[in-house]
Amino acid sequence: MTFQGWALILGFVAILIALTKPVGAWLFALYEGRRTPLHVVLGPVETGFYKLAGIDPDEQQGWRRYALHMLLFNAMLMALTYAVLRLQGVLPGNPQGLAGLSPHLAFNTAISFTTNTNWQSYAGESTMSNLSQMFGLTIHNFLSAATGIALAFAFFRGFARRESRSLGNFWADVTRVTLYLLLPLSIVYAVFLIASGVPQTMGGVVDVQTLEGAKQSLLLGPVASQEAIKMLGTNGGGFFNANSAHPFENPTALVDFVQMLSIFLIGFGLTWCFGKAVGNTRQGWAILAAMVILFLMGASVAYWAEAAGNPVLHHLGVPGVNMEGKEVRFGVAASALFAAVTTAASCGAVNAMHDSFTALGGLIPLFNMQLGEVVIGGVGAGIYGFLLFAILAVFVAGLMVGRTPEYVGKKIEAREVKLAVLAIAVLPLFILGMTALSAVTAQGLAGPLNKGPHGFGEILYAFTSAVANNGSAFAGLTASTPWYDGLLGVAMWVGRFFIIVPMLAIAGSLAAKKHTPASAGSFPTTGGLWVGLLVGIVLVLGGLTFLPSLALGPIADHLAMIRGQLF
Image 1: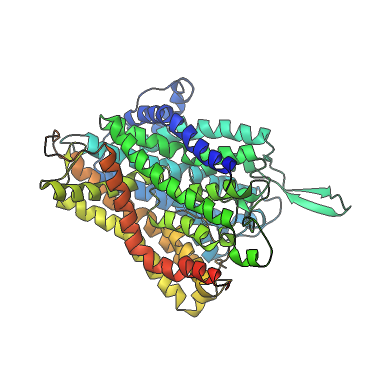
Image 2: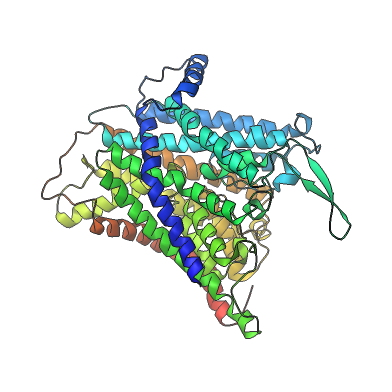
């Protein structure tokens, strides 16, 4: 470990904290539906969308209607993407003449991008045409991210509104987030990437001559535009198979740093937006503090493990850090930080192969996802997922002080606690259930490239990534098979929507309640004690649930490595 490495990690967090309030203020303006400076240009576009679709943006929706419209919207987008991928071979924008995807791969990919997971059982540059990348996939990068932020807004309204049956308007929320946040940020971001050397062209292949005099064909395409929203929307699906380890996606150390900042940017801002929505920004800062503590714990362990390297190699006379699977352009600190960032958020982009990390270094990305993708988390999904844990935490606190638990002015009763438990239970039920099924069947065991605990870790990581809607992979699992494409597709759909519906039901229940002023018996939810309780609840639930599976995978792998056995 080096001073420069720690400075990178701490400087990264400091910059994000400085950006939290400005980004949160912009998000709060969209939450309230207020005009922004961009309305001068984009206001007529927004109005045109509403007229074309026959939508009244001022019409309020209860939680059931909000959920129904959200589900129908996403189901239709998934069907459209499936059709585009299957018909890719006969559609334009295909300079390489690539064939359409197989049914199981098209099914998996359509669900993957609809759910903001962006799991890739394919190599993008040799599987997807330019049209499929731009129309079939990049549209989802915008709309799945906008859906997540819209759902966060709906949950905020559940806490903020009093004796109301409405949570806002899904169509208005998605439109405003896309037009006034994601689209302008992505345009500026894409221009920066193009200036930094990321390709943006409709061309297919360029032939170049190498230094040895050989001919090499370089695949190009509209990379910068997809890369921008891939990071801002915590999508993670790479244009190239190597993702952000590819020099055309991530050409410099500066771009690498900006990519990490952009993954967390909106998630940080949403915490401040929540505090502002409920009338107390300290509530948002408390949530952010708990998130940052959890993130720094994970990033520190990952950096330490990778800097320590592999003791087996040390005994063979190979000193130094673990550089296997890493880009020498970035080194250990930036690679470990990127791994922690991309799995703390539901991004899934990678600049190093997690399968090549040490056992403990690979455990951190895995555990980040098993916590529910709430350590910053995906855009929108992270904050509403964390608020589910906050409901459980305040319930525990209510038991401590001997009165009905309250949070930001709303009484938390049996209905909210049951729904929160139901939503949180989705992850362990499907992660562990599907991992167990794949670990004892011939189809499942055909996937891992490694044996022993490391091979089990590859299976566990895949289903953790799918249910948590992350999309990163250990890169050691052959997943493009009917078995894995099918099961992972189901896992991604369940991990997204089986959490959203109970969450919206909680929001509807809270919105209908009266505001309860804090009293002397109320548990404070803005101080250090509350932050510590939040961190403890998240760790205990994740640790108790997943510790046995981690013991069979990365922990056993680490103990074997110490004894000189590698897999």
